[in-house]
Amino acid sequence: LSLSLSGAMLQLAHALSLSLLLSPRLAPAMAAPLGRSRPLLLAAASPELEGSLSVNEMKRLLTERGVDFRDCIEKKDLAERLKSSAKEGKLSAGVPTALSESENRIVSTFTRVSPSVCFVQVSQQVQALPFQLRALEVPAGSGSGFVWDTEGHCVTNYHVIASRGPVPSTVKLKLQGSAESFDAEVVGVEPEKDIAVLKIKPGALPPPIPIGTSHDLQVGQTVLAIGNPFGLDYTLTTGVVSALGRDVDGAGGRPIKGCIQTDAAINPGNSGGPLLDSRGRLIGINTAILAPNRGGQAGS
Image (tube, rainbow, N blue to C red; front, side):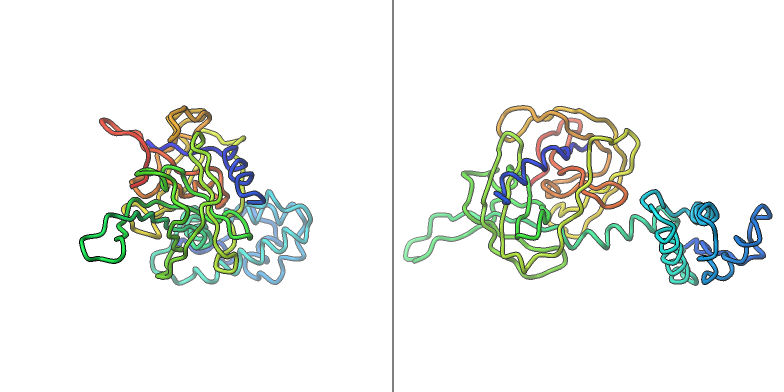
């Protein structure tokens, strides 16, 4: 079982920052259900005719394609969603191992969000050997983090940067899929909430992850976790919300209330990474593992 800090904790991070192929979605007309009207049959065969459909017909066609349109307010929004779904259908046509609609959504979410997830590494200086002029730096811990805003702030867990000693002034931060690392300044910490805020030059960062909400989460809802378990970057796991309102012991020794329990696989190195809803919006921070004869944080 995995525990994640809820979205309410993310507001605190902001304060600390000090502004701190089953392809045929477009089936040929002859394969369309008999219950369709003639306009729907024509639109299924000829996407350019979709603009002539009524609002209800557009919604029906989107529903048949398994496309979410709840955020579409006007008819033009529905028409645009139909066009984009038609393009996706063409791109996926002919793919040998077609994906289901839900799989396509997860793949798309990972592709879009993963560049904004980072690998956080902490080093510490050790006593130099005789006749050595410089102290040696050795790895002292690692975990995950994510881009919070366009000002260069990233968020991770407090225990990721302070698990083996005092809070360092800087840590190494590497973006997903990049060999280049950056010196990130530690600009804010809240041990009791297990949150730390880092900062690097804004120009070096990809866009921040869109913010969702944890207030209306439901048990059974799909969630995604991205991070660097065991130092392996670009790792995605999926699961569902198993329970809400859990308490977990924080790095400051006090329980953190209102955590999200999921069954998405979390391993050492996942700590500080984002927990996402099925649309790729940030709803929590992956923080702890609970397992038989094992517990505590998921940093390394």
